[in-house]
Each structure stands twice: as structure tokens, then as C-alpha cells.
Image 1 (tube, rainbow, N blue to C red):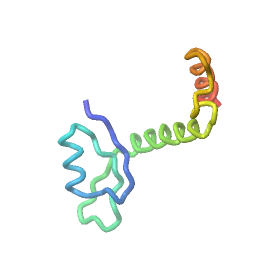
Image 2: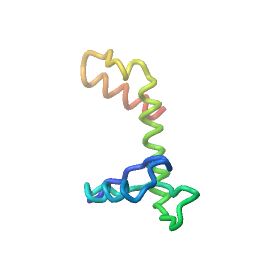
Image 3: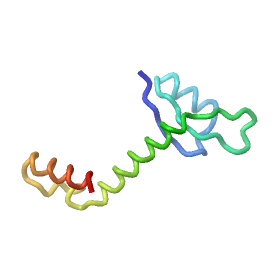
Image 4: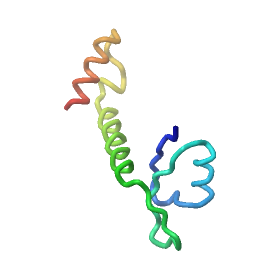
Length: 86
């Protein structure tokens, strides 16, 4: 099973793509504007991956989650669920 990885356009190179494929990682990289033969990524995966990355970024902004103030795992996971639904 290949794991999709999203990177910015600056990493759109043949060697970088090959190294990802060797490690069984599916590259989801948008092509640069000056690429002679553009490879079109799966934009649905690109969009979904971007949404997940933004959600984790917003969760990290929550100080209570970032510093793990809660004493029990249950209360930490409960607050994590509340923050994720928000």
C-alpha cells in the first residue's frame, strides 16, 4: 500500500519522485509551471491531505493539547475530540 505524501511545488523533481516511489510512497506533488512534461497528481488526495494537515496545525495551536495539561488519558482524548469537532 502506498502512502500519499504532499509536498510543495519546489520538490517537483524526477529524483525526488523516484526516491519516494522506491520507499513505496505515492508522491502527490503539483507540477511546477516550467516542467516540460507535467505529471498530474491526484488533486482529490492533495486536497484531502491538505485538510488533514491544516486540522493538525489548528490542533497544535490549542495550548491545552500541545502541553498535555490533562492528568488522565481519558480527559486528554475527550478534549482532543472536542477540539477536533470544533
